[in-house]
Image 1 (tube, protein in one colour):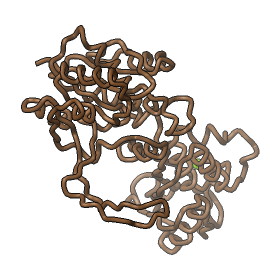
Image 2 (cartoon, rainbow, N blue to C red):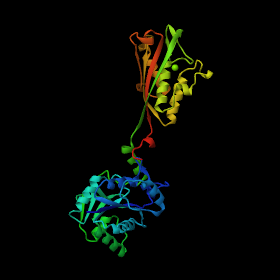
Image 3 (tube, rainbow, N blue to C red):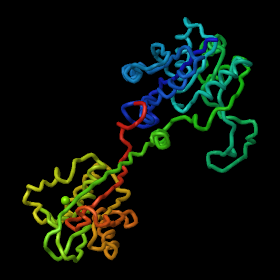
Image 4 (cartoon, rainbow, N blue to C red):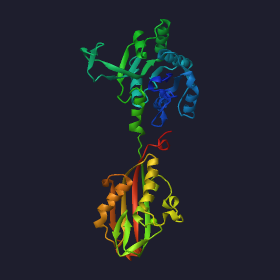
Length: 397
Ligand code: MG
């Protein structure tokens, strides 16, 4: 059994917005809309040829977007003024291939899948015509121009026709030609032509997912579930400063009284430095030394909140949102507990996020190592940033 598919992509797509590209060429989840249908049909072994019908103006776009595709694609044919004539052009282009069966599908239904296609094909074992459709679940109202309801329409036995619509090839070709010969161009789907030609048309279950993309909003809404690889970034940072003489240390932007100070070019706020590096790490933007070279006299004694604020700005510039930060201090003293809430509040303030998205923890190193000997203090930080979905990470470009 040789089966072919005709994918109708000849519309100008103006209803989906005034973009330069008609809707069938716009990306859905990183792939042009019409290619979703090609891929769905190509995965079925029974489909030996795919004929796409395009508008002649979009030939270059079509050829670019199908280059190198692993599918039994025939050269595209140009459609006509109405959908009906476009389908006929696609059917006639298949004549030399002599398929036994043909499935006609609208490129505006990119979420068709192998199961639906197979059900339609199977339906052709018993009938000359078989289409995907969904039973109505909403209650139907009839209303006049004033939008007052005049009747509730009995919905039992009512179905919404989808595509693909499958036919025995010679029968639908003859029916289409007969319709054209009769000057009939008002059929809204191919099943209607088959019915008009006296064929018995069967229904098989389609899918709610197999919906039609009509408006720009439909296309936008279609992006969310599958595109949707959220671009979640995690960065880490680590910093050390040596204790020196003094009477306080700056930790997370909070002045903490201590028997020593911390030595550094800036105010030596190690946890803020670690956190700055963590944020820069989320966006692959180097480290604190790249942005604020220690050789630069401007940062002498600087308040380290300046560094963190700049990292926040860089994240925002990328459209990013900081979802949480987590800081760990490694030292024997000073004790962090009494200052923890003030530190979290200060971090929330600098980062512009809720205090519940900040965390400050502390540990000793059991008197081991340089922190254990109180020669210095170390800080580790991680940050999580949510960036807008990036084309570079979309699947199947
Ligand atoms: Mg430092």
